[in-house]
Length: 318
Image 1 (cartoon, rainbow, N blue to C red):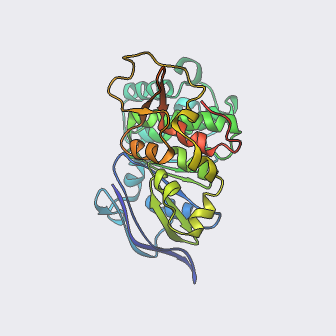
Image 2 (cartoon, rainbow, N blue to C red):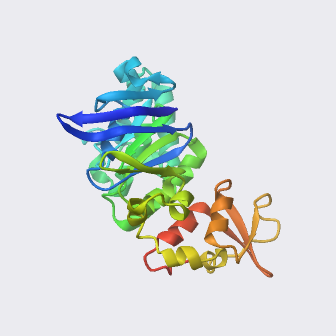
Image 3 (cartoon, rainbow, N blue to C red):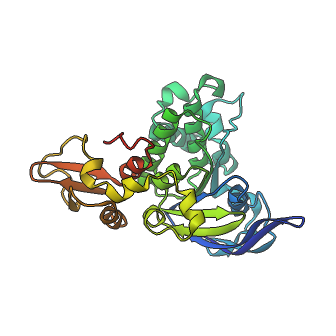
């Protein structure tokens, strides 16, 4: 879907991105992470040509991005920023409808799409479509920003630290909502963050940048179990290595409710003594597992495992 081949970006003599290569598959949630100034936002903005590259090629749908008419290409790539720039004097409906109107959709189709998207993110259309942005909370504005990027049904969504300005509770809720939404819409998402916990929770794969270069690309499981060098180890250092080595599936689901025999049929059943590395292997192919012991069956989701590992206290078990 998107491919970087030997891409570099310089500002004068100063390199921001250095000869990077990676491919984002269709339907993948691909996270770009790294410390401040590492080039992650520059990398994201080169995809939709908000920033021109210096050397190399970026391909979108197997064609160089430079081959696409600029505005048509941007209509096919939704964009969500950290600070949602909603038009303050437009209604929520008018904000969401911007790209569909540019693409000459009918009023009937626009109305239906706006209502569909608002319902999708838990905002009642009859209550929210006529409001203006100043009447919304920060989390509600962020939801509108996400659905505005989805309005014309683009195949790709770019997200630049979309939740970092929110309070921790709102941020976690929107992370969970986006994961659930992605299961339904299956878009190709390129997501920038500086937060390793967010990257582990959200990403199918993670690309870690350092001073404009790629340090490692892999699944969350690979980052935790097979960090390639000391920089990677240091960057994921918030994750408690003792928890990684000592925790079991039973620890994670200790306080989770039981599920009845016959519920979640078809999912792999894993013994509660399974360690993290065994869970990583199962979660490379499945989003959910059933954890079993002699008496109980409990459901474990992939994102809940990473949430457990990311918890600083190590005590907020399910």
